[in-house]
Image: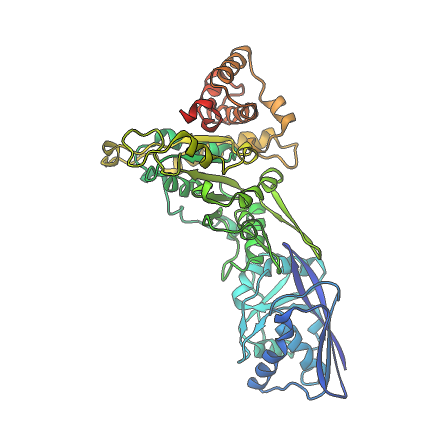
Length: 511
């Protein structure tokens, strides 16, 4: 008897419907075709044990299973449940007349219980597009899939429930979630707050500017000056995600298998990979493609602590994603694209010893050693970082203060207002939403300078010997500072402040 039912395969961050064809006939053997990987091939052992333990059996006949389309690789153990259900129906052990109306996914344990799967959200989106009545999956993934309105989502804990439901012996209610209510629910404020930061007012101002314009930023300072502490608090002042951003972010984390028993991700992600990370772990890919850290940071912050300690080839692979805000991974057998629109926050010591140009430092470093140290970061990568800021250690007087500084909530309100100005400015453009995304044409249109501002910028570039790459970056940051002030025009004071944030472009920075 031939039976057809449906599952799904996730490729990149999109899903493809898979037709599972099961034929049980005279003979012996178990044949699984359609480009399955090892995890799918091993399913027969899990299925046999699970069926026996819930009172069914693997038929002693010839079983042929085809996963179509056959040229698309099928990966993972989530095909266990549809394969088992297909075998039961094809062998006449169940009737399940409505089996082909659902997408069915789930990994089987030997006792018949179900383990969570990856990619439930993109699978649910595809199931709705293809007109399926519902989606049957492990209960731990149900809330995530139920975000998709118009699709009946049934979370089950074991295969017996699936059989009873399809046979009409068990009434299951689809999980219903109001995605807007889920998105708008009251959220706890982030754990880290700028109110806890002692001193460092100029650095907090710099972080506010970076958040307001979506600018990449690098913090340069000796150990213990607070670089990591400041970076961890940046998400607390970023604008709340839109529902579109929340869905995009949730989809990526769903594919990576990092979501369990939750619906939408409503907090902007903060990713902090160790400096020993490989290029694959950073940008994604591998034998079984998975999103990397830069995609997991989509719509959030990627923090690279001790930037020069990362391998140069690892940092170089970030250049294209920083420019295009997506990463394309090309291999002989596949090409996939992951979104990667994130804010890069990097930190570094000014020298290998960490105390360059500090007369009281325990370790002295020559200018040549420092040059080699900074040489680990390429110019093209620095081109993509708008703000460079030096972080100095906090004096004891500031550390011992009991008065708290300005909190994240207050700063965030100013950031939101500046972002609203930018959203209105770029509303006619599809791919530009804030100042850091401006190209040359937008810079020329929205960053026009009057004579006084232009003269100030010219003088600064000549006296400080700023590189040519600093010009556009200064204009972008100036535009953001003006937006924070509510100024339509970029004034000389905005240019003057932006010039301070190009430390690594100054010849004099080396002393």
